[in-house]
Length: 180
Image: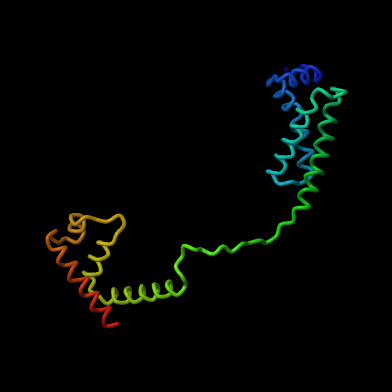
């Protein structure tokens, strides 16, 4: 279809022949693209304008008076659509707009401050603990949780002594917090 006259391509394309459309796009695609890119649009806008030009051809395919002048019809349409897009973009003035939506699910500020203060106290007391207690409590608080056998392998201590050691460490942490 590369040698087919434009008039026949337009008739075939108007009848829904995909190969005819592909041939028209292959022949005139660079022309349309170069006219549109001459307006220095970003790639997305240029692609939109180019697609609009091809849509206009679909809409007017059966009304092209002089098929041999399709190149100038496409160039003029590309220019007109580019001007229309430029005007639309000029009217759209970017502004800094933000809406602050209160987070109703968040606890009130005083509760968050209290939580932060409590967390600092717990971390301070945790830092005062022995390295062995810190290590066992850290391993017991991992996500996903480790079972006692995994902790036993990491610490090199019997599974049966993990629970009692954990209890002693938590009691130690509680006493340190009470002193603070």
